[in-house]
Image 1: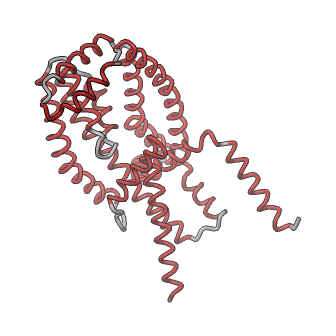
Image 2 (image 1 turned 30 degrees about the vertical axis):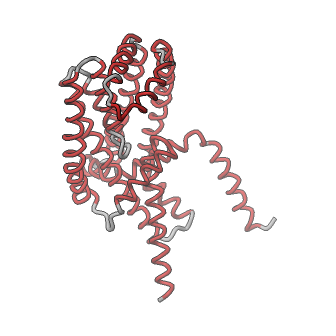
Image 3 (image 1 turned 90 degrees about the horizontal axis):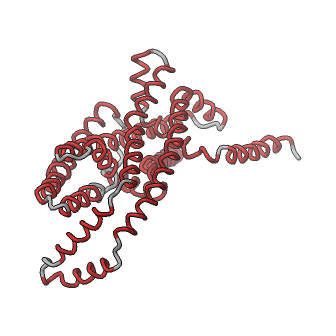
Length: 345
């Protein structure tokens, strides 16, 4: 074997070994790295405040855990407890109410009525409650897995902030990346991912708080349902509907028509129309102008479909990974276009 082939061949073999060795952690490493890129401005703010990269990385990690992962853990724990304590009598009451509503459907919906009645023939509240209990145990198992995964993400997130510059410079030197292109890629990734992350966070916190205040006024756990609505709102188009519609139907089944009407109108008018359509774009615009300041803003429709594609492909963390892959692709296309123009002249 020629000498010049030995080192590259050995590097390929060892790289494959590294890939296999760290296979269980690659998703956590990727998510943590993207979150670190997205929250670079927060890290710089803490660094300016403390003057220490260690304490800045520590405070950034604590803030991420409090704002992002603590609500998720709270939600998964409480939803598991609620499902385990579900009363089958509530399911029977809802079935009776639903059958009563079918009697008042207009004649024009007779076909729909027949289909709904056929679907209720095999409905067994006790069996459904048993299935829900089984799902509750699965959610409990998933919660423990999620918390362990969260711990690794926070560890890698701290490492990405504390050693990120050295790691990036090492790979840039080792792979002989051009200085200008590598700087442009990092700048575009940092700017665009910050827009995505802060937009997601602003949407979840703002709309979740509005919904939590409303259901808290009605006597429910406002913090829990606010967190649920916050994460549901991240699902484009139908996110809010999957929260308020079942809630309104449940209130109707209990005979609380006023509560059902209130939560329906409140969610549609205050959250979906006023907050989501008018207030949220203003918040995102402020974020763009004061914090991010990208050279070229990526089309919001592209980010919208990137989030949908990411959620469909990678699950929950796809809302971060999807836009990251899309931004990287567009940045590389921009570099290719610039290089092509330079070669022309």
